[in-house]
Image (cartoon, rainbow, N blue to C red):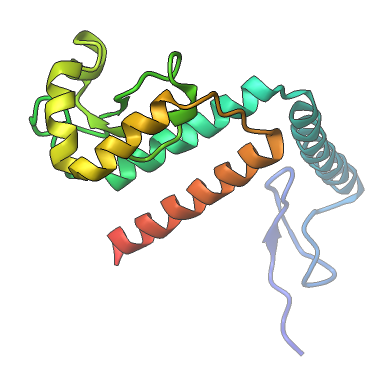
Length: 187
């Protein structure tokens, strides 16, 4: 049989001689205190879980689109990491921006089209409003003339409206692609 050694109480930090090797506290008062703190932790965890579910239930179509936009933009930044700015050709510092050739507002049907969005430097995307003159010259070289022509045709087509289940599916798809690409980058 192993000799039981003195321990420090998990609550008051005083040294005590336990009766059992699994004993964590020195006495009844500390045991009650530890039990209350464990219950509080469990209640806080349950509340965080419930709050997440409630928030999910309150989400609108627009909220889901914004979630998809964030994931899609991250995918573009991971996909184009190390590439130059699509507009000016400079080296992109940090993550860069996911720059849309056809704007989200006027062409929502190509908002999540991978050929329509490429990494851009902050200067071009924010301060030069996408630097579209240069973007239009460099984009066909980056994706090829045939894909560029198809993008132009898709941009002129009627409005594409995604349902919430379709949006959720796309979010999971792009999250999976991001994980996959990050794994490859590490290996």
